[in-house]
Amino acid sequence: MTSESIGYILPVWVCAAARAALQVLRGDPFVADQALQLDPGQPQTATVPVQAAAPLADGWALGVAQCDPGPGVLDLTRNLQVWVALRWSGLPGASEADWLQLEAGEGVGLQAASGAPCLSAYARALLVCNLRPLVPQGRALQLRLVIPAGRQLAARTSNAAFGVVDGLALIGTQPVVQRSAAPEQLEVALARLRSLASAPDFAGALVLVIGENGLDLAPRLGLPPELLVKAGNWIGPLLVAAAEAGVQRLLVFGYQGKLIKLAGGIFHTHHHLADGRAEVLTALAALEGLSGEPLHAVHACGTIDEALRRLDQLEPALAVRLRRRIAQAIEQRSAAYLQRHGHAAPRVGAVLFDRQRRLCAQGTLGSALLQTLGAGDGGGS
Image 1 (cartoon, rainbow, N blue to C red):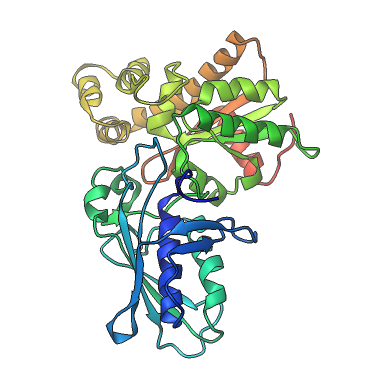
Image 2: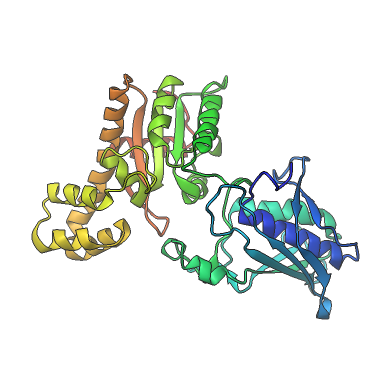
């Protein structure tokens, strides 16, 4: 497998640059094509190219890679350079817990609340499995990541709204770039859904997760990773596929600014095909009793998060009811969608989070599913 036909996410390129720099730091020759384990714990490797690696002053070594998300993918990381500088740490007798000291340099996203580098569990595991074998026992590695254009590119994302500041986050749960609006991404999701539902130990419940933030957040809430199916924008076809595969309970889990489209009966959620979020929000707000200037103010907001924060200020009790109504509408519309396609099951629950990755709304079924699945119950009805 090579990167010529497969596009990789940002953490993969960071890992390749880091491994090339570490080899140079050890005194090994520069290797332009890095053999990386992309599935931590599995021996299979893939070849990922780097541009350069060389020793620097003061004991540092630098590795440079250029991101390639693959052909036909519109992604802001295309041709993005990443620099990884590393050196042996002065800490003596480094343990397994502190052998890797990761620092965020210019252009790397930080968690606003803690100031720590923002990287997913997969991104960290990728570094660990590919670097640890090259670090002698008792040594510690100081690794500083720089993304020269990261701060400027981050301004074109919603990172800041999700609590990530100063640069690009290193997130992702799999190495290959997933194109959520592309037909092949639907095929990937369908294959995973059918595989899970046909397993001998399948107990009737699955979780459709919308987006990388949802995929990262769901396990932190106790939802079992083995029940997660990344839906992308193809929610309608996946609801039908779940019914056909015998799924009895389905939790739809995602960002409120995306899932609110389902409350309006829009079941392919890519913005190029349909939007209507402001209209859905204001219609549901009006049904809750909002009117006049406050209703106009909510409609004029640029995002769903902004609108609901505004409503929190104008009518806090109504804002609480509205979030609940949105989740309930998603559950009702999903049931109606399945009925139109000739299916009475699965029962669909909705759980939504906001841009601060906080749970903000749960439907009746969604609340029950979150509690039971989060407690490890994947059983049927």
